Length: 325
Length: 293
Image 1: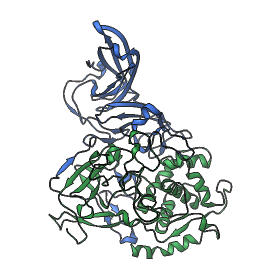
Image 2: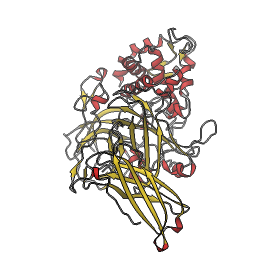
Image 3: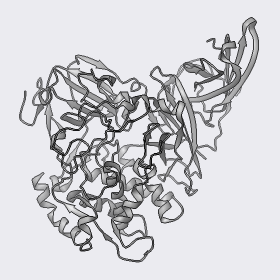
Image 4: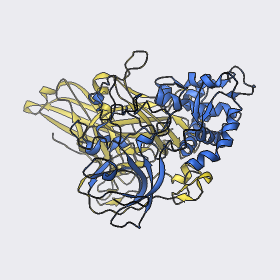
């Protein structure tokens, strides 16, 4: 990760040069490699006739809106775990009560700052490409004013279509107003934050079953305590966990202020191919938790996890990297 | 509940034998998301991370201590124009069949029912009508109610939802006789939509302006077939026992241009459900049907 950050410093300088002096510091901040990934995705999928900065702002607007209520002055965390989804199927063994011993083996369905349930949401490069492709498709098929077309392109995001946060953010991070100045050169008022990486503190390693330690596979370590960027979704200001053991009392249908889903403990993620279908795997290894057994959950890729997960417990712990328990 | 299933129209009748269903599968991921996957479903590793690719893993494990399979996974399918369970891999008879185990009937107040039927013909069908005849004590016919399945081109093996409403008080009903009929599929209707569920918002979430929202199901689609001008979505929600607890449809979102070609994307209007029903839907599994015209 350090190597990655070193490599993309050049991109940061480029991005910073676009900032209007005196405005950026109070306008918006975003992950440096994340900005690089958004730019690459915007170049690839930009609608015909749209300015690059305009499309970048469209891609960026839902991020602050989804994970921090539209506050743009803090860098969103690529490792953000959504804590508002309410469905019993997301809890280990479908047990949504306080006595569930594995309650923090919780399958957060909205991941990363695009808060999608795509398998690579905690990866600013792949998430940005997916988001850009989706927005491009929806923009092209929409009619109306630019604002109406943006609304269509943002339809997949709750914060945009229900909470209506994205349009103000979009206007805030661009100068001048792109709709009133259709021929103007635009500046993106976003500062690049070099302290937040492409994976936001998560990292790739290898995993193995100790029974066959040489049969390794790539796995993605998502250790919540290593999350970079805005950690308010999981942590209090003093660094302690926020409602780590929370049980969303909205399970009865009505949410209450201060209620959250559990905060997942350290887990590993990978994709598998089994019996002709692709699955996303999340594994809470007992050597990285306080659990007596390891917990393994799987979902069909492309299927909303709320529609059902496969849960199992295991006596073995993962070998990770060169370390076996 | 007594169930009587009547075969579909004679034009659809086929010999009584099992037949494999040709499932309308989704395109490969490398085709759907160019550049994000290769033909082996491997993902490229960025050059600034060393390059190469990362492929789906085959992980071997001994038997788990405890396993709880997904309630839906064993039969959940994502197909063109369809997401959910109950889509048959093979069909057994020439009929459109009521799936009795999915039917919910009112326990008080006016008698109403929701549930699924399934097309077990080899060919697609349309105009699927579900009829319930309500009988009271003494086998007196109280009322007959009919409802159309809102999918005009129901493919072989595919389930379809229905809702029936009557004015007869549930307490008076002692027996129900069911019938299902079907006609020809509307071939102008396209089912080649890739349905994308965006999000579900639970009923009652309080917005920053203090209002309480209805339950919302947001979805869109990508056309993967012939050009269409409009589309609609129908969703059915199932309780934990697999019974249908609600059915509702929505049209394509406003401001969508007609002439939706293959690969084009568009949104559906939100499906919004208010209090009494909406409160429990976020806990339910969702089935979805997409229809283009």
